Image 1 (cartoon, helix red, strand yellow):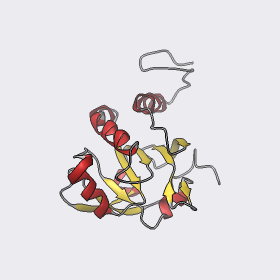
Image 2: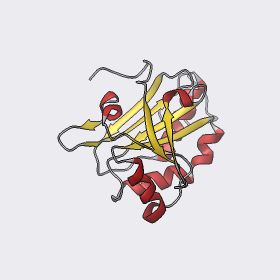
Image 3: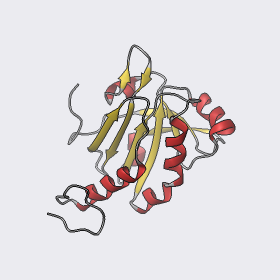
Image 4: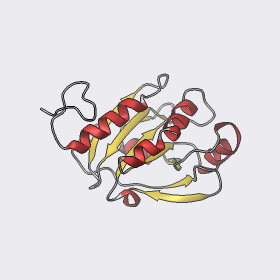
Length: 173
């Protein structure tokens, strides 16, 4: 796979369920121009690890908003599945959940497991100019760290050189 870091993010337009489960809408990369975007892929609705991540990011959504960042969750399930999940066991969240039912976006971002038809746990931070600045991709059984996502977002926003374990307020190199 070709690297994404430092390049324009692959474009997308997807159907999504509103995070409150009320309706559907389209989401596109263009919707996030001028803002940071934390975009994460997860394997499937109605599973075990996925709801812990989605609700975790929702609980910390205001921390992302303070950083002028939006959050978008994506899986290969339909927007109808997302809405049903939100309105049953997942509960309301503060950001949309997009449907990559064609699996094109998962493929474009290098997270598609073709033989299983699901996405790996891929997380991408895209800057206000639409450039991919960070990605982490790992297997299906381990959830991501929201604290680490916020730490990296804040580090990227400094525009400087941040040493290992840098946190907001510490000196840059």
